[in-house]
Image (cartoon, rainbow, N blue to C red):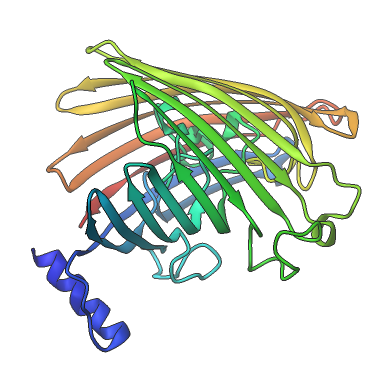
Length: 363
């Protein structure tokens, strides 16, 4: 009740009056400390030690407003306005957008749910329609050592100007599809839905019944001619994985194939702006321990330049984390891990170790 009243007050500050009856203010703050040792395999000058205050090491700090109106006969109009920020310095995230994480309007009913606006991809673990969080014990968190991005070719991006549809659930199955007319308004100002601008499409199918959850997801990126050149091939990415809950532990598995993908996780600045192709796998587990949860992952990615088969990169990462909840809204965490990526052509293998711990509070 307090959050709903506060949300109405916030809306009043924005618009002068607030008439929405079903509005909730929500968010979370993750602040911690992290130590990173990085060795670029270039001698003593390439070795660095960093100890710093971090934000979002375990979960992205954010705030948002969400709500809607029941229209009757099972139909509802809803909205989500969510912005990311850095809790260590107060800066807005997602290229200084007020609602950079999500800004969407939805209509739901017996037919399913239709979304319009800015949202995270189906091929991500975030937002209203992300589906692949079910494939990883850690998801896209814990720095460069724990993120499930390290064993994929996916960019885990958010997209502007997007239409998406989610089917009703039937027999344990649900499906989702999305299309972006122009993926990023801050980087491209060309005409929407044209060859000059970057467009994006994705789809996913999920099955959940009893202890089993399985997901098949794919995306297709049509790179804009203005930003990437007319000779840049379109990229695609396919993921299959899920988890099985044995009670004493939950097992996660993920497999990925990708081609002509830009924006992959490049912890050591080896791949840079290359379009790469290859595959990746990840195994993980979550185990209840002493009132909290231990999560562990082991990931591998084999990639090469899509236009230069001699440029090959092999990445390993491993991480373990423990999360302990003090309440439903507050928890502490500690995580550590290792990542390396071998540049076979240069015969160099940069690597990094990380240790982070912090506090998360949700409101």
